Length: 116
Image 1: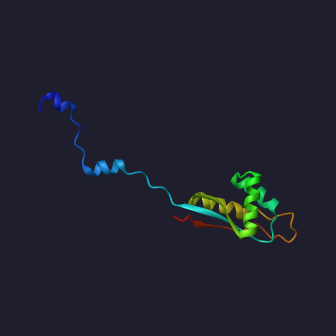
Image 2 (image 1 turned 90 degrees about the vertical axis):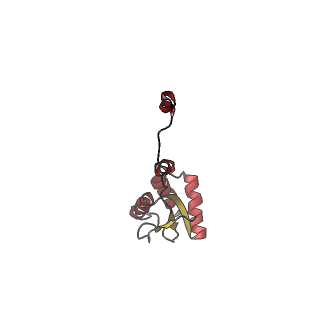
Image 3 (image 1 turned 180 degrees about the vertical axis):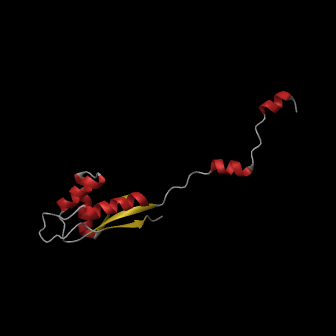
């Protein structure tokens, strides 16, 4: 091999090194944050909570409050597990609905792995 051919030849790279370069980082599994229905919280409470904790506009908050009321639950966020756990904990710490005298505390919120 001539000197100029050796200078332009690509360096020898093992197959495993090439495979490592091509592998994309794995995405973290996604989790749904589920808000559950009860008779202790008003639509107004849900709407304001979703605005303050999740940044959902009031219109979106109303739609989600309706879904919780009619279907018994609603997915309010899909995110990484760590972030979902933080949001669940914030819902649980949000406090009672002061518009409902019998309200004893925050709404129920759980996590579930996203399907598919």
